[in-house]
Image (cartoon, rainbow over all chains, first blue to last red; front, side, top):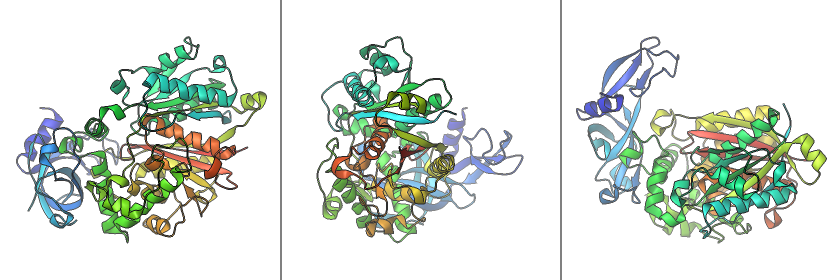
Length: 121
Length: 384
């Protein structure tokens, strides 16, 4: 299974697959092949719970091809509770900024043709 | 290292153009060659910046240009670095002259996309993101910058009306630029009442998709002096990178590559941000100009918006930001934009900027990035 396929399979379980550097402990998304902090290549897989809070977001009304039927929707950057990492994804059912203040608790809930799916907790 | 100069510059008008991508590439290049007062045979090679040539059925544009210029035996290189392609192409030409490989080169940027329509361009632009994480989840480019804008509104004392003032200022400048795509004045109300594209950004917070080509002739100082005519010196050049996806950055209201590139350019030039008289910065969206002016060191973090409110970035104020009208009003023909900024440097520093002249300008800076600033180049120019 490719690295991206592994991310997808874990996202479907509400988890984020991460890479922890075996040299310095720095935590990366699992698409990292070399450590950003110390440059080494050894990683151990660490599964992180997909719960967090909204770091920032936008509500998209003019969408790229394939997403027109979902508008309006939010593209969300989620800050994870259990790791110093952020992950972005798609959130449906968001029409106005009042629906999603920055800091709103949210979590990874799946993956489909809309990428990694995030929902409010 | 050889000193590098810009000897000539030219652009097509930016906007919706009828001529083909090969035609407009040639038109801008001929304008630069004539501005420089050289013969095409004096050009050693060309550096072409272009992203979506496929949209007008022409990739590998370099040899087509060289054939049309009557120098088909001269080499060319086509460069893609998303919206920052032009400044990277300029940098490659700069580096080749500085290293002594060539005495005279041409760098031309071009894009031809308006005939494809908004959906095509929105979709293909999204391919410049870190697609697995961003484009795949429905992020558009307005959406990614809107995410930065939302973070800025949350973190600092700023309003959507403040962002609108950036658009109003750049349209004021663009009205004075005969090559600009959007030559009309707008008001804060116009921006606020325009359709929401990606909240909090509205249509008039966004630069237009444009067609256009820009070109500059670069040469060694020795070549420029022997040749005569107007030229400007390139005294600083820097490049930088950022995590490709916004999620990889510790702060959503700063673009790391801008800081890295500008610090390198300032160091090479032996100047600081305080010495710069005017700058062409990458204002693909209003939020971008605010973030840029902070990351370039013109204002403290969080203070860029205050400077906009106090009109300190208007033409002939504290520091003239985007006297050309910027991407917002002059237009954004993706591959041409970074070269177009250098054309503005040449016009301003040789006294050919007409009504939008920055008074007593000696030092100008260009800042051009790709995607959400995943790649960036900064150059500093000095009048002679």
